Length: 145
Image 1 (cartoon, helix red, strand yellow):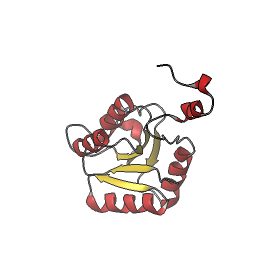
Image 2 (image 1 turned 90 degrees about the vertical axis):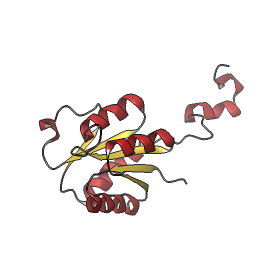
Image 3 (image 1 turned 30 degrees about the vertical axis):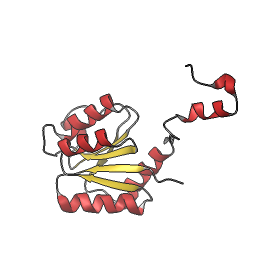
């Protein structure tokens, strides 16, 4: 089974590497971005990213909360885990259905959030969503041409 891909967006290199290790230890594939610009570039270039773990206080053309909203608008099927040392509500409203984890977070907290989101993960096969996979066997369920 193919591992779900998680993009870790964290400005501080040590925390980013530790977070990516947690993601890998939880059974996911981890990609890393140091700022919002790198994250958007990676997301635009890859279609297999299912979850983004983003810190609110990152640099770039936007902060982490703005990045989370941009991801929700541009890639609505990507799940979000937002992290911050403070209460996220002090920075603004979280995007719809985003998970929040307060720093410093534990392996168990991140793993629990990832596993919960993985249960919502619907893999794509050859660019066709799962609901259309049955059309191969039941032509009446084929997508319209």
